[in-house]
Image (cartoon, rainbow, N blue to C red; front, top):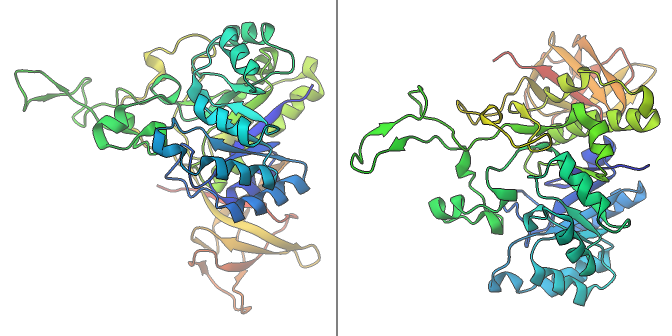
Length: 408
């Protein structure tokens, strides 16, 4: 049995981090035709570099073309698809039948995945898309594990099922939302969501236009559309049993540190389960690790039935951040035990820090000595991306991450 772990990447560093930390595949957006206009996304040259990095390591890259297209959005799409095909992109993710037709006409051998935006909620719909050239469907987030099992039983064996297993949840049906468009003129279905669902709201009675009533007893208002984040780290056996072949993590807007932390935890537990399903035991250590990246409180979404009021956050839309990403290991000398670290957030001599990397447990130590690139001993690393030498007692490797608990 093989389970694909699929990670998001908003830029080249995030893509490399996802792959180094255990993703089997990465989904990215180009500069047009995707649903994350606020992400940095990839130029064609960056895509070529990304494909070289991924394919060298036998990993796959999928490019999002999941905009809900208006007439003007189709301009330039055939030429763009042709370039993606020439570069060797492994699959494209589409939601719109018109976009699907263009892909089939321009690149008939291109693998096509159907976005969650297409709202696939039953096996007959999945078979329809399969008959029209779709190899994989990303199921609507509104399905339970029971419903997913039924879909799996009633679709062709070579059609794959992909489902979100971690990340932010949209309040609107599979992301098909008009709230942002109505309130700000930014169309969520064309890549410009303002996340209006996470704003503060009060209730106003029609005849009292200047009187604002909180929906709950909170002078700041309420976040009535604000979902908790999806987290299925405890339920990998159930996900596998349902027939999901690709476990998808949400978050092309998230940081490199977030991507590494989440991918690492799922990678380790997926491998442990597949290695010995009968003796697999979940350990909350990995939920604790996930909580060292930014997060909201967690929910299991629709997997075990419809969410209730317990799956919403009513007091705040901000993330919980208990740890900071402070450095990325570039090199390590075994003999001297000196690491070269690229600074990402400020830290001092005397700080207690953690190091972690792919497929290994984290460890903690205090920083006793640091040197700048001139060999001068320093007390603080204040400059972003400054190269620092640090004595580290346990061996580390390039791509290992240095983090520190936040005091605030």
